[in-house]
Length: 237
Image (cartoon, one colour):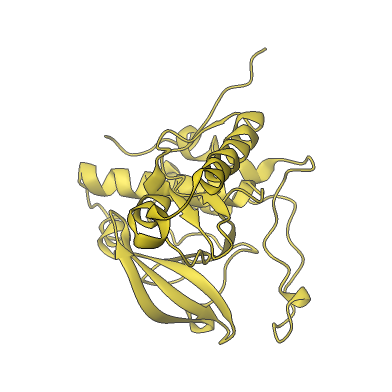
């Protein structure tokens, strides 16, 4: 894969939406003990533009989703994947969150002037940019919610809501999951269908929907996650 073109990344900048579904960073002022946050800008395309071809060697632009690393504390490692590690953590010492810690090599390879990234690093960077921009532009009760991004320095954090029972595949294989009757199982299917219906309305193709990419909370609420392969469909004329 070559260097991502501006259209590839900016075409997925769903934060440009101006309708009722346009998402904004969570309002911290509504949470007890959280500091005030500046108003959300009308445009949420900072990260996508920063990762486009003309500016690959510049720092990622900051926007209203950007928070400092010091606000987050890593508590317990939940797993490891292609991008890096996923941790359970705390935001400002009180709000439980899930923190995706991105491997440094993903960004270091782009930081050296004149460096030519490997195809694997190229793909990681492009997919990461797409996941961040997709999460910024989506808001639905059946989709995992983005809380913040820490991209000023390494490692990069992607901070989302924490789903305590983990992914649906692992949960269904656990003793608790295997003891479930038909009704809650059908409930899982209906919840996932709700999330996918919303994506269809937004003309989004997830491209990697699987039980491992569906997260489960304590109340058996399911949410679709991992949008690294998501694509925005072109609107028909």
